[in-house]
Amino acid sequence: MAPVTHTPRLALGPVLYYWSRDDLLAFYESIADTPVDIVYLGETVCAKRRSLRLDDWLALGARLADAGKQVVLSSLALIEAESELKVLRRLCDNGRFLVEANDMAAVHMLAGKTEFVAGPFVNIYNQQTLAALARLGLRRWVMPVELSRDTLAAMQAQRPDSVETELFAFGRLPLALSARCFTARAHKLPKDDCQFRCLDYPDGMLLSTQDDARFLALNGIQTQSAQTYTLLHELDDIRRLGVDVLRISPQSRHTPAIIQAFSDVLHSRLDAAQAHADISRYMPAGPCDGYWAGRPGLGWGEPTGTVTHNPA
Image (cartoon, rainbow, N blue to C red; front, side):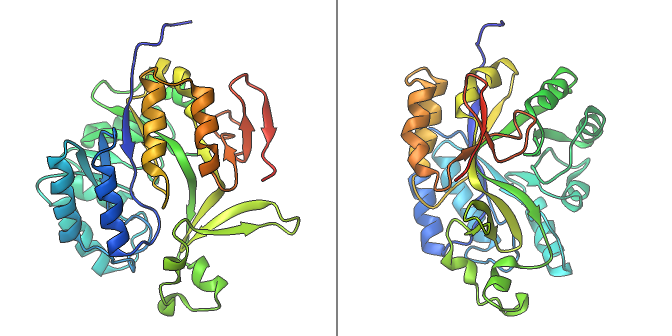
């Protein structure tokens, strides 16, 4: 087995939930002192969420850059109106920060003009797509969350030299987006008069089956896993695969502690099993890693390779 010599950088993904302006600003103030290297900023889920405007995100990015973070601006993953395209154009033309394109409209605006990141909502499923986007200016791609470790290994073997790989390594899985707002529907409200009910669910609304098993989390127009996807126990293998960046998806509480746990394992200050035990209490519906193993997504496999279904 090849020795483990590569140490990925840590990234904090964009906040996927609807938080108030004060909560967002306080959250990023706490992030400035964490060992995260890259911070993604912006709204990726719903254009109605306007706690911060683009100018606010730019100002926040400047403060985080002064704190030594690489800042990336993230775009919406589902564009539905001309007004949203106008904001996207401003985002792509910001002139300072790298942009994470989360749909092909953003890729089109950035292609041939400046380097960009392809987010997890861009369907990069094979080496041919990766190579085509690299010719357009792709600097880093985030592997779609439903792909497996074996698919990643194959992609890494033929990855263009100029492209970095980022892996979603912790957080509720962003599974799907819809034109319909599930949170509004749960409250018997129309999408156009949702009353911003997402503000009541800073980590999404848990959905259970009739057998009371936690199944999904509803986040406005986004569907997420109820379980928290974590690859903390797979970091040695991830390092051998040459992954450049590990993404931690923000949650409303304990994100700095989660970042610290990943950093401690990566730098051999803490055993992975102990770190997983330490942060397991921050996973309300338990862990999952099924997609990584090429199995059903809700499955959970221990480092030994034994895979079980997560009943939480």
